Length: 221
Image (cartoon, rainbow, N blue to C red):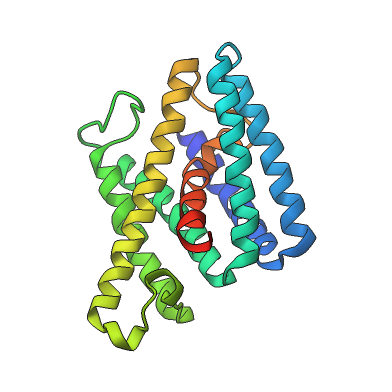
């Protein structure tokens, strides 16, 4: 357990800055990175659903739409907002992991035995706290999300931002549980082993592949 934690921490320090750089750089860097992630995700999905044809096909179709949404979302919307969405999902993962390990407590569901209620609330709390700090530091606008001017909303505007962050965090956790459900059906702990301490690609982007398509439909389409 301790070795896994160390591996997870060290790999996160290396991977996260690289990913953020690629997202910010955009262009061919982001497109190539997205394509590699897509191929790895497809491979992992097929691998854990070898004998489940319907799940396999449905999942492939969903992943195609999810990654297409990520491509369009990155190129159709403010970069800072795209980064904001990514970071909320990251904060959600971190909050759930840390609070779940520290406070433990009642299990959330048998689908994912490691998930606890403390982890759920930790995910929500940390994502709101760090999300609001990010919003304030870069003065992020949500006008195209709420379709209203900031000065017209006042305190209600801030409440809507908090509510929006909570929705993103909740959707990310639901995505995590859905992938956990399919891992449980396949009787595997991780979708892969490409990321030291983290498992597979789908283990790390399980929240994002659900959050981004939903926001793409709501905001862009």
